[in-house]
Amino acid sequence: TGYITFDEGYGNTGSCKSEITFIDGEKGILRHRGYRIEDLAEKARFLETAYLIIYGELPSGDDYEAFRGRVHRNTAIHVGMESHFDGFPLDAHPMAILSSLLNSLGCYYPNLASNDREQDLEHFDEAAPLAISKVRTLAAMAYRMKVGKPFVYPDHKLLYSQNLLHMMFSEPYEQYVASETVAHALDLFLLLHADHEQNCSTSTVRMVASGGANLFASVSAGVSALWGPLHGGANMAVIRMLEAIHKDGDDGSRFIEAAKRKEARLMGFGHRVYRNFDPRAKILGKACTRVLDEMGKSDPLLDIARRLEQAALEDSYFIDRKLYPNVDFYSGILLKAIGIPVEMFTVLFAIGRLPGWLANWREIASEKDGRIHRPRQIYTGPAERDYIPLRTR
Ligand code: CMC
Image (tube, rainbow, N blue to C red; front, side, top):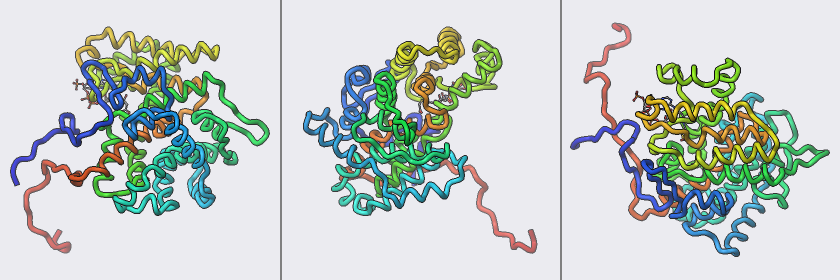
């Protein structure tokens, strides 16, 4: 059957053609649909960026209002879904809950999740804002379940990020309305995570979608792929690493030495594609300082992070391997500053990444000449051998 090209971990394999996101890893450039991430971070909001990523153009005022209207109208979860939460143990990880419930969501909208490509595409304009809205409600419900508190209904008057925080932190006797600083910081976090071409979770979404699976099934696989510490789980791992360094009374230098001896991994450092500063980390590093200043807070973990960054940028181990801080290095400090519990960090990454997954689902579903994704392998198991009956083994 001809030769198979071996490319471990697909480091050099283009698995698809895509018009969504451009990355130049050598130069540290990231653009969505041609727009620089720095411009979007400064001037746009998360939902506007989501629209751009999904539909290819910045929305007109009317389009944006219509899209936001669809997001607002879809915040509530079918009551039947509330009972799903009863089945999870209290210490279930919210990523497990989110992945399961996103897949289940499709069962409540069979016309949007038919696994008939034509039909699912026809309903995409309904399904995409619905998913963007309900992922947030499900995430907040997972958090409330875990802390043993009643679910909080959404408040349509609030901004996307404020509504998430309201559903997580409001009490029946007191509504939590996030300050502008906090709402803006969370919106920025979501925007910076909105898409990142063929990373592990997005290529998983495309892989699942290539077999014809519906949008909800595909993005729930994306959540599972995101969970691991080398991918979306890195934002939790960074905070745990910084806390451990702080607890040990280390200023970071002992940890750097351990990383060089390969006894530890500097979480939040390195990237398969960026061989230069991750532009998202630059924006988030600045945002962390601004948010902590505006909130009048200080965090010793930010000081350790800055020291690690400085040391790593000067150390030949990191310079030779082109290891720079990535998006997860500062995002945990930002989320911690605005009161998000560590266990929810990767869930928030998933909410942010959903527009990218949806855009990639739509792109692959719309392909006229698309093929199912089916890589080959290099077999390294035993050569042919004869079966030995059980009694003689
Ligand atoms: N700390 C110390 N050494 C590292 C690190 C690190 N964080 N990352 C890579 N290296 C070393 C690695 O040991 C190897 O050294 P050598 O050449 O001596 O064997 C060299 O750098 C190349 O590393 P690699 O493992 O081939 O790189 P990769 O492209 O397979 O992995 C990565 C990329 C992001 C998984 C990896 O850098 C890593 O594990 N980083 C920490 C986890 C992390 O921050 N992940 C978030 C990634 S960005 C957002 C996202 O995708 O969610």
